[in-house]
Length: 131
Image (cartoon, rainbow, N blue to C red; front, side, top):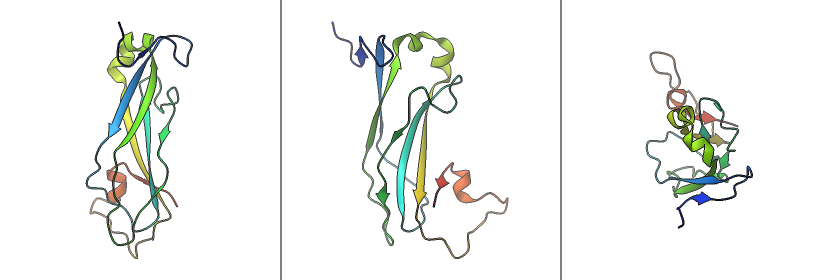
């Protein structure tokens, strides 16, 4: 009998489970004009807050048009999770998918609007901009 996503021999030498994730849509992004964007996915848990155990899944840089919204295509990634971790209560209760959108090479706005409480809009959305 075959179990979908189960592999008898994973990268850690023991059985593992393939966790497939798909980012199908992205709405309400507030991107700067021009430059490029990339998506970075990490699987994080209480004992691995940066997601180093499972590695980063990083898309190639995608150009952002100057005068229109970028065309979004679904992005997929597969994380290989050791089967024994799937039975650890702390891991199961704390694991989550972290999605980060990066932008570089964009045109700087003439004057960045700040909300009344002083936190930039991008920071409130958890987005990072890199030049």
